[in-house]
Length: 165
Image (tube, rainbow, N blue to C red; front, side, top):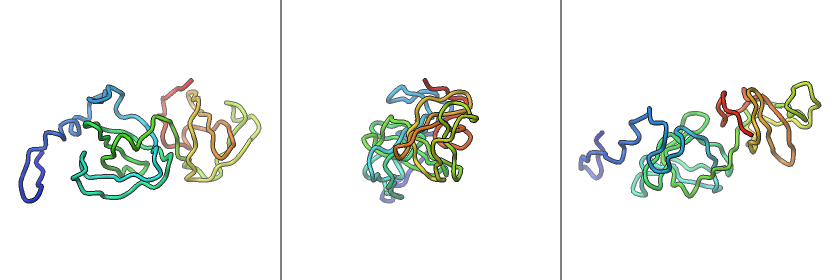
């Protein structure tokens, strides 16, 4: 890959980790790739490349927003959001606390990991909830002081086959 910076073409050695989509572990953290994280900060710059010299494409402005890490380079993580948009974010802006984005309007939270159990709350589309335990098809969520279980299919930020205890 070749980058042009100030009119000078440079070989992009730092992008080597980006091209290797088949990697299963991050070259820096040795954590799985891809993996889900969340925004620790209430504001974070998303850059075109893994350094402060790269242009800021946009700014994430939602603390707790779930993001998917797809690559690593030094202190930088390439992330993408639910819409597949993303870029490079400094690792200090990210947290290992797992959150999900509700993708169904008026999503029912159930008292137990059983859709026949009583509904404890309903969440609107776009709500960010903290992720707890997950079974094969349901996850425990916490948002706005409410807790309950919801189907994985209504959430972004958790893999379909992911089980959490």
